[in-house]
Image (cartoon, rainbow, N blue to C red; front, side):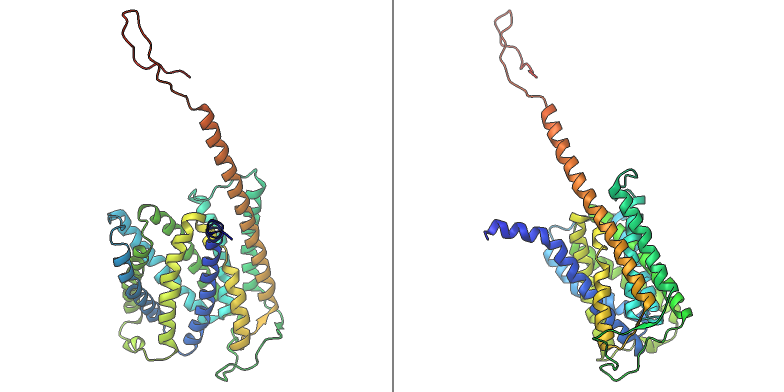
Length: 375
């Protein structure tokens, strides 16, 4: 394989490799967070520590690598960064952790599969995603969105018998009893929290795509968003927890590892990778691979944490995945059609472009006249 062929293959597969790495990181991070939450981790302080660590890690990288390429900060960009720091690092993370604490990591990950549908609807409303109602591709995207939401409702409202997998381990690594003892009330409460968190996450993705157009510095934007998330999350924690200072204590245990891993990988690298992929494929593509993390979590959680899945979870997850890939199929066909239409427009413009020739014309006085345009 020649160097040019290898580079072409890398360019085509890079977005997919980045997103697969991102979803795998999310899956591992969710299991680590769930284990820490079961041991008394406070999700308010965890969100603060997570974003603070991401700021300390990516701040120096942004300073050195984007020192000359960083655009000028304006009031509009600064306000967008404040809102970005509120949407995902504060609102989404705290609601997601609270919902996970009431349910399981598998259930929380599966509920997040409504994120692509929410992102698609918001991108459509803001005209970041083109939809033609008479086009088959657009109709498939709309149907897929409705199917995805229906799958989330199945997971929330239907339980059914427990499903045993061949790899299911009846005991955890720490010889704990299964933690999947959530009641129907906890399941509904957790699903509502996660759903609102997904709306906030989708808003973050859309706003990030808009912000990158005027502030195309991925590392700097990542560091600034994490910094604002740390400040805003600290204010929220002080207001909610008030004088409870014990929640700020941290030791060399799973809680510290969860903060470091999720801060560096699931916040810092996730924001950066999302921004890079978003430039080429758009915000809907970034959120389209969420079912992958659900599959990884289901296997790991049932193997090591003794979590049990019921029939409602399995059926709902399958419906969500089917609806999601209807959206992806429709979007891929739209991209091909838009690319074909764009090339045709370029060819038509090239044919209609006038051809100018500089011709010296001698007038009646024997002097050369100005250039004459010949079409």
